[in-house]
Image (cartoon, rainbow, N blue to C red):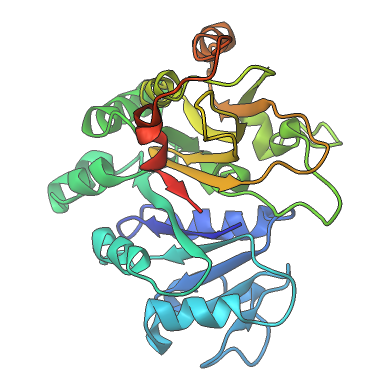
Length: 335
């Protein structure tokens, strides 16, 4: 499975350092590699162990960190992915407050490091200073427009109608990306990437947002999950239309898909992070049920409507003899 590289961007003061710290502190189920522009500007210092200068840094929770001051993105990704210890689950690149996120995205897309892939652009927006920031930085609208996920910070500091107004403006700028509220920078890391399952153990779909202990203050309690299973394969054209039209409240869709097209019987792993959609082709494990299993994660989800839309994608007749039906899937497929 390829390693997702997520770009975390936002203007100075938007709260992306807080988001990064919260991701690190709550990453109990994932092992993250973190690339930051400048250690001095990022509040991970309390998590660092001695001897970090000019090298990969080991953090207390098993994550790794390094600085873009020391080399190009490819050099740093190589350093992180070849470090000793368990494999990473994801890499987060924290862009400086003055960096152009599109430049960071281009570097990741152009990366030649084996096994890594672009995992999406996450743009942090300050709910308190939204309009002021837009006046000071007119490019904010462009950053929101290109985002795969928009994280709305400091939502605990402004009245709910103002939060709704900022969220609505972000959706006007980008109809595809979910707008995720993050009071005090708290975002469940599993909304952006997944842990690698332990050997000989397959995670149940519900585990993505379900904890053995039901603690009301845990971040995952802020989100809903809708699960879907079908023994019959899906019509790929209908399923791509469903993904394209999914509401902004759906932050993630993940799981395994079986398609009803002759010659395309492989298992397709689906991962969406906001607007970004990725399929990964693989073989069905021996003895496994060849069924479509999906979980949709978000806030304020209309479960009945989502399930209705997914059931409309089910194909119960003879396999489709039409290679072109898979074009929408293949455009987003990695081998």
